[in-house]
Picture 1 (cartoon, rainbow, N blue to C red):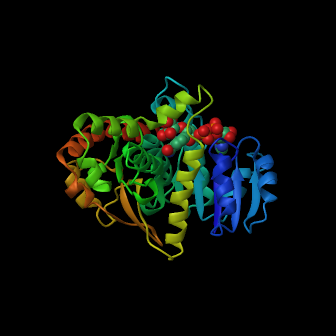
Picture 2 (cartoon, rainbow, N blue to C red):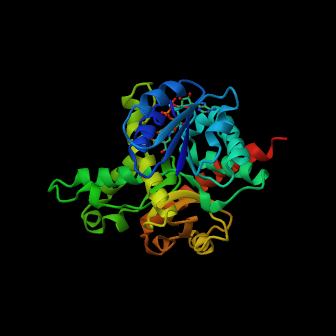
Picture 3 (cartoon, helix red, strand yellow):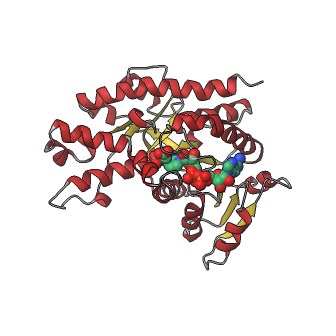
Length: 336
Ligand code: NAD
Ligand code: LMR
């Protein structure tokens, strides 16, 4: 299993690469960044685990070398937010970065699985897909926008409200659907922690949902201009990567939420669109079953089970998501 990290020298890239270097599931770890990849690579290469580390800068065809023969590409490349910015404000810089990395993947690793972390995820995943489509190598089962941090936060934040300390975050698996930005983030506490959720009044419930939707801002503000979530993101990105690798290897099959393209070829996609009541929405984060091909099926049944309040949240999410998706798609379509 060769894993390539693009943006490996950054705030997320470094701890994510460390976790991958520690994993027995990884045989080769390939680091790519526009700066400092060799430094990070030299440092990690001293760790006495089996994964072989290589590092690459753009010169001398570095991206092609980094991607050649890779099975999984993880992309935390791009600029993070500063206080006062939205994720959409990052589009101006990150859209071009993600487009160029997608072109590199299309040319050098067209069969690889790809996890996109770079923000705004609601737009960067459509950008990535459009570039792969232009190159005739798009496979919806293999492209994932990483929204795992929203699930991680949902598990953590609800457990923090439980003064009896009976709810342990590591025992929870709160599904979070929609997208990865503000009101597009829809945590389904009624399904993930039903008993405790019932005990909350409307004000507590709204505050909890708001905290998950704007959890990223807490970190951005606390870091005071020095970036956004990196360590919790590295943990979350590694969690999804590990589940995916184990699923590709056929060891276990996991269900986790991820932002994906609702291709009609994928089991459950049509049902999901019908239940969302919006046939034109083609990207969304939903629970997906992972397997050797990547996304095996979309576990749409959560949409049958959500309560009226969560339906309202989803409807607001879909409106915003539609705008974010179009922005990404048009960015590529409008280029020669
Ligand atoms: P950072 O600035 O610390 O690191 C980004 C790295 O990307 C830098 O090392 C930079 O040199 C590199 N880079 C820039 N252009 C590149 C290119 N063309 N090719 C390869 N590498 C390139 O930022 P960070 O804190 O690591 O965040 C990275 C991105 O991840 C941001 O867009 C941020 O908003 C996003 N993010 C997403 C989530 C999520 O849940 N999906 C969570 C946290 C952060
Ligand atoms: C997060 O959710 O922490 C990330 O998307 C980074 C950000 O900009 O908030």
